[in-house]
Length: 45
Image (cartoon, rainbow, N blue to C red):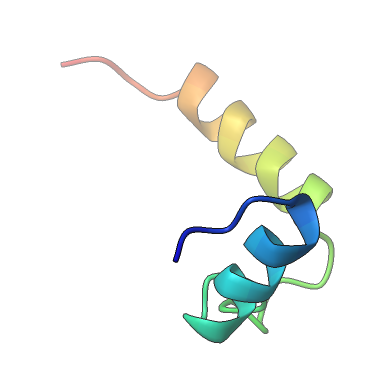
């Protein structure tokens, strides 16, 4: 059975460990900003 609503999808993601799988990240938006910044400023070979 596939999730058909947003609530079912989130429940499924929680059950398979996709949500809260990185307890070391307190602020996901700040983490994403840092990753983008690193990608934009990395050295090219």
